[in-house]
Image (cartoon, rainbow, N blue to C red; front, top):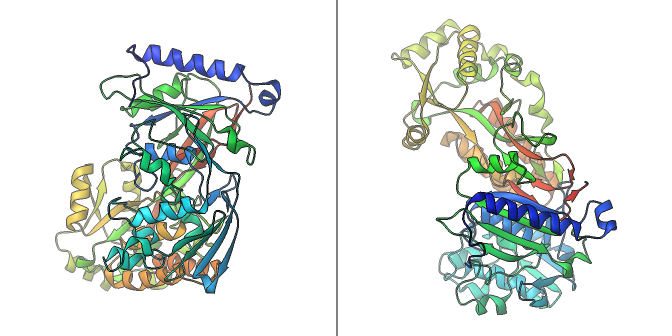
Length: 541
């Protein structure tokens, strides 16, 4: 990668970033300023992007750049709905086993050297076949394994060229499946589904995505500079508005500057010093020297209790534990980083373009004790006879001690059983989970996908195998369901079943935060991946 800034030291870097931002903004016309367009945004990445090849990239910094540099067939708009991007329209055929897309003829590839060409259906065919080309070694094969012949290609039974994706002409693209997939349109918004220009790719001679001369954009912004010195401080990525693509779908910012930091603490420092316009945080910022700023809170992770299947915890005890937690008391105890959970799936998860909500489990009264769940004297005696040395719940030491004390108190007061707490640091905690060295544990379920299917799959993976088999079967039924409404009902049943059987007891939601200057509007934020799409972002001075 080329070195752009010779001088060392963060002070010079920040002065330069500020100068470029002011110059870019003042260089815009009055009309752009009035509607919030033309601003040069600055954002701090934690870590240098490892690879800007969409069919390979997995780290968050790379995926953030890809989000702003590429356009796929479909996109997620600022209301969270899946809508066409390069695709003008599509048809679902053969009971969900075939999708036919009509593409725009005015989406353009553009690179810093001025190379420009129209994006075609062949670019998408080439990208998907790259996923299954063994030379690529893409980590995304399984996600698209429903495409015709994909599993046979993975198993070495067919050549990757026989993947069921083909172009009729430059603007007609067809996908054929071995089985339906209700997540397909969502998957088309993700990085591995971005197109790849074969001519440009081959011209990079195995450097594709690794430096600023080996990247090309078909999205809102193109890269002009990528400067990174692992031993220096002046590390930046510059991206400018792709004017060729703004005629179809207006791109508001003039430019984005990504500051690259190795130290996570510097992400906050840059925002606090007004060098960054926005940031994503796992904890709420109490105050900032920039004065006025906005904070949006998102529930993104579920923190709940799971049981080690080898310990054979009695169902009546599990259900008693689930139903005797006093969540109303928790409401007054949780910190800003957590919210009390009355269900498993966070509110930020959407399905089929709408916010997911399972009313069967979102009502607070589902956790009120039922007579069947109140333990008898015999139940309690049997519990202690099974665990003469007592039972402790494995907890990572970052969780608030006061909250866990209340959980233990609720169980003892309302169920008549005492559970101890076994705190462990991060490495020890995960090692013990992996080795099954626990009776019960407080675990956190997260997902990089805003997909309901993938979120529930992560939860189901934590439950005892006896229940897991049924739940996995239900998940797969939802995935191949002929309609989204049928799939939604199955997902609701899965969440309801998990709670009613107490195989996973939700306690809290993990919150994440988008923090930004008060004059900014219309950034598209995915709280699960942590990515910001800047194409519609506006700044009103």
